[in-house]
Image (cartoon, rainbow, N blue to C red; front, side):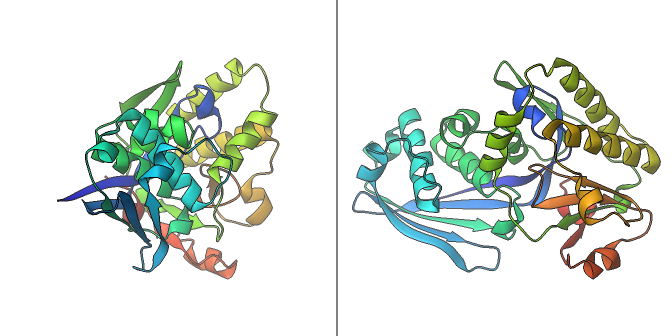
Length: 305
């Protein structure tokens, strides 16, 4: 037996944080993703290997079936503990892989460096859900948590608007193919941001009445993905950046790191790490390299179309 599954990575363009409370978010699946390969094993255990994009092994361990069936909720965030938690919740949704098979050899292969923050966890969760024929959104909610937009990106091959409606994911496939994508770049900030920590901080600090704020973000989300010109797109993401900055009481990345940038900069996903989006008339690579940021990826080399 050998089975292979694949899921897309993700970038959250608008709606960060408030997507957790029902705001509309514009998200883009990436060209990069993760593959899961399942083979028969023995000894009622998982022999697990996870490969980074450079083919180096970044995680390797053996996990016994008994560890999965008896696991309890834990706050530990080690790779091993998180993996056991995901497999435990998968077991509770469909126990067949434990009860009907003697063991597995598992490998995961990223096509992006794992520190990029493009969805190492969400692509794994979606791949496991595909393998076991269970609902990926339920598996995410029961294990890792989050809005689920990343699962939606894992499952779709084009731009989406994502929203939670009383906890139920609503996914709208949209068209985003303006003639200015050549003016959009994604820049890695040289540090990985913890989604779990960022979500927890948001919940601690958010205001009680979000109705007006969500309506404003929904309007800006629509302005972003429907923008037909570079100036209108840049203006919309700048307004969105300032709105989120006020909500989470955090300075914008543009104002903090790139105040002299000739263009517009926007944080993506959890603020403070991973990728930002840069919009400029001229290729901004030399500017960002001069600031110490060497991973600059053009839109067409990052985003599925």
